[in-house]
Length: 518
Image 1 (cartoon, rainbow, N blue to C red):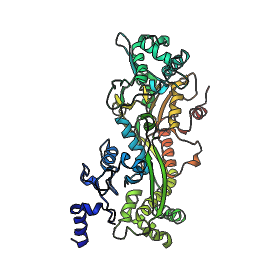
Image 2 (cartoon, rainbow, N blue to C red):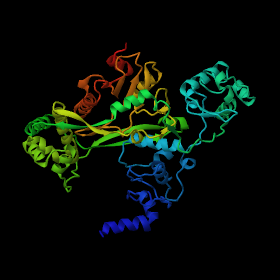
Image 3 (cartoon, one colour):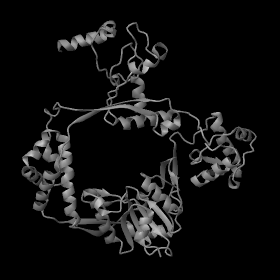
Image 4 (tube, helix red, strand yellow):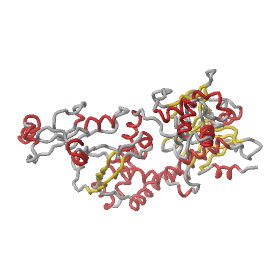
């Protein structure tokens, strides 16, 4: 071992008194993760929590921060906590986290993990508090409160002064709850006892027994799935296809070289240091990801070349990324401008990734003009595509017309689209299509978002498969995204016999323009 290593080890492990002396200039990086349980000796932590984010533990961030965030001691072994040094505790006791995720992702994830462990009581009898709650009548009949019911209940409670304009329980409301005389909507009267318990939990702090520990709901396929209309649609769209594509390899190579020479740029390596603190927060604030406050953000250019000793199979990586032959990739790299190829030294990983993306964009544009789909005898089995039972978060929306009573959406566009489908009198039944239902395309697989059946009397086109995107303009889609949409249109054109339309839409109203209301 190097003599410096030995002296450093002796200082840290054998001469703690000197290490803790304020006159000692040595600072060290200490990875508490190597010890798992943390370090209980009175050392001042400079940097800790060197941890990859791929760890499987559900509460990984909270555990790592908990182990790492030890309160420092001074040279006399006295903890430097709030009672000792007051507000300066936040300046001295700092935890630096080095993780393979952004500050925002780490902060949000940490708040979620903390919120999941809190037994905090709700602060308000607001609409969101009631949504998804299970209530039971005297006969044991259960009902889950949906959004409309929650709104009606909240409105009645406000009208009769049980809650104020901020949805907080009033003094008169507390008395009514204790006396079990809260005025309820007529249809909720049989569930009085359950609702009274919910209201009581808001101001007493009484913890309600959770329905399950995972904060999820298990839902099953409902009668809409078995409707004749949906089964007819399923028969029309469950046909599998194969595709055929022909284009000139030389054209692909030359177009790729032109694209790379024009659009390939490699950024400087930048690292960011972000500083923040977790405020004294309620469970609701943590769930809203509002507990962290970022106080400083600093960007610095990384000048040193950390890739010098790393070997990359550039050709092999690009073959995997593009599905082209090694010969074609070599030709593209040889024909690139020397100036652009020299960017490889700047950041090999980014060079490979961006070259792969740009070549795929060229490939996609050529495929769009040269792809043909052919239907086969094979079909998707509804039993494997649509699981009889699925588990969704309690935040999932309750919907009508859908093949499940709840739906989990991935964006505000999807949420608005699902709500419109649920309330439309023109919609007979619809399904959010699972990933197990897909179309094979040259770059892999593509799963459309929605399958919809409209009422015959209301529209000209009964069957519609939709992809929800933020724009209806085709030019807004580039490369791979444009290829997905084009391939889906060709696929459904081949199997739909003119009865099934596929298109990209940004809203329910835009879809109505396509199917043409009668």
